Image 1: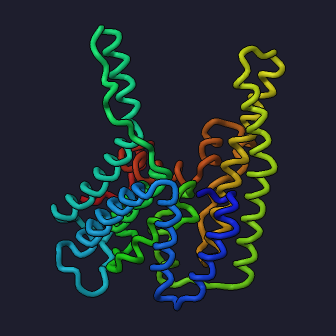
Image 2 (image 1 turned 180 degrees about the vertical axis):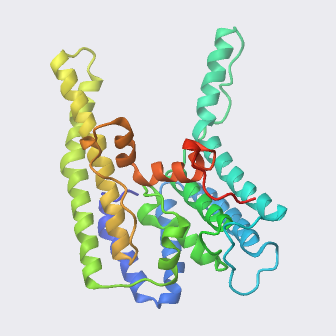
Image 3 (image 1 turned 90 degrees about the vertical axis):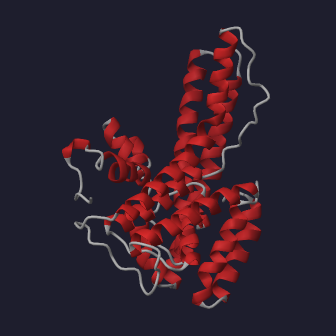
Length: 323
């Protein structure tokens, strides 16, 4: 199910909004989680099992980190960013990170590895692995694995409190507005909104405006550019000018596709009362590759910078040391 489909716009979204606002606030996260799992599993229900597995593992790892063990009573304490961590807490965050990266690596690169093994076997005159099962890449797996990891890492670093309520955490990981196309929302950015957030006609109207703008980019600009690009790339022989025309069309197709989906995600979040971070900032106006990377997928580039690059010593500006 995609945001621009009639199934989503005329059936799923109105029903989701009706159920969400008809329920008391204490039940909204549960309903939003159910709706998000329905949205995600529409194409392939088995994808839900992968999402649920990642969610369960990170939920329990977060509890172990937050409470320093297996006694989960009362409100989870905020960890001291400068204090050392116990071996159990370090083990929990390692399990969380390794599990998520293993899931991501397996589904992203399994088919690639099989193809390369087959090519190597053919080159050596050996039988290939044609009987090996092919793996379908789950939609949005990069987004929700990174997002789920940010929870355990933020709790470990002392940037956020752990969640005792599993439904709240499942809602955070699976929220359908940003589940498939981003942005990657860090737990520390939305923890307060999960606990309390405001609703208003103005916020809802802004959400509708963002969705309308995103749909216009997708349907009126990205899709026509995609048709031109397909014609150019599918041609057996093509003139130089036509090739450049096709390349330009493809350039604007991916631009308006990503920009449109980013706008729709922010708009859907506003309609549900959530404020998501900006994920796209006119990257084609960049004056360098570095600036382009920062503008194209803001949440991904900043996530990789803060959770991998800097902690590993990037630019020699590592954050506070937690042992």
